[in-house]
Length: 423
Image (cartoon, rainbow, N blue to C red; front, side, top):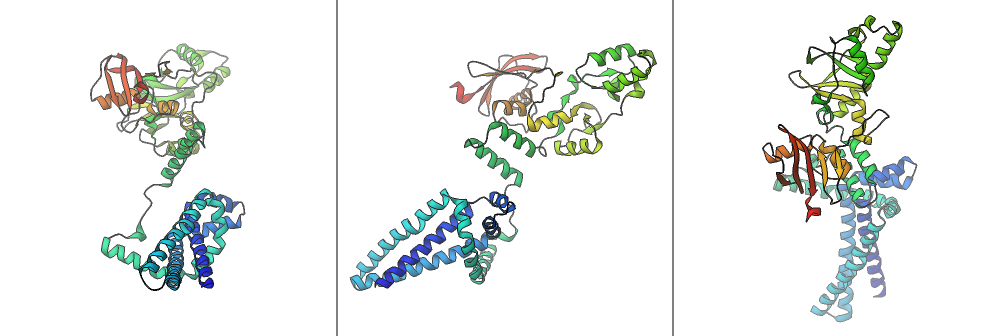
């Protein structure tokens, strides 16, 4: 009787081992294990190998766990029959005692410990569990075959061809957002990583400087006027057009102009603006930032003019614009700091209509959607389905928008209040 009780205790310990191993090995981060493996950690390497085939791992653990639990229950039933004799009392006592022992000591307690120390426990049990899974592999393989066949024929589910619901980029974004919400990653670090991951999701149209804001010069203008305009500009590259702003014929670089002036003794009339201008570099508005960044590196250019499907000029994008999507605003000594976003004491925010939704979200840590519009004004017009008037108020996506000013059909200034703060 004592031998049977000790063997039951041993089986409960084995059950606890299987339960804790299952939780630890499934809860541990494969990325973290891979990082430790690259640093030479052999235990982390064992965890990585073990978790490569999660179906085989779970099958082996469940097989072992169920086997020891069932054997423990059978032995316990025999033990209590010896103590209480044949009848319902022995069965009832055996069921109650074993349920409590298995639930508390073989399930809840080891799994709670495994959740709290998933990585360390996973590396501790991995060598032993690898051998157990290998020994049980033939039986596990048969079980997997039965499960897959049943799922496919009865439910029409082919688990062998199932893909992850989320792309690796989406998984990384979700993990970063979760760590930020838990306070483990600062906002600046989160924005930096998300910006790099989202380069494939953003087009140059989303970040370009609109054609209305581009500083351009007529190549046929007097040379003195062109030189003075270039020297007075805050930009080193200025597009040149021939009569029609859509007809861009070159890009004048301030350095090239100064070199040309130096060669002719600063005689403005002797320089040929068309000759010293660079060939314009055009890109379609649908180009992603990742594609454009690669193109900039390949062509060794920093400046591109954005055109639509009809070849009309839409705006311009620079290498700095793309980098700012990752690291945030980069301001030099010539930048004019105009953010267009002003926080108010009452919790509201006054925003210029041409501020991009992405910039506003990054600055205020908001989540306004940018799928249908690039700017804040564009979002309001899209949601309102009309050109709003001054003092009109709209509420959507958890924010209240009040139109403060407009110029003709263009919304130029708005007040935005998060609804949870305005209650």
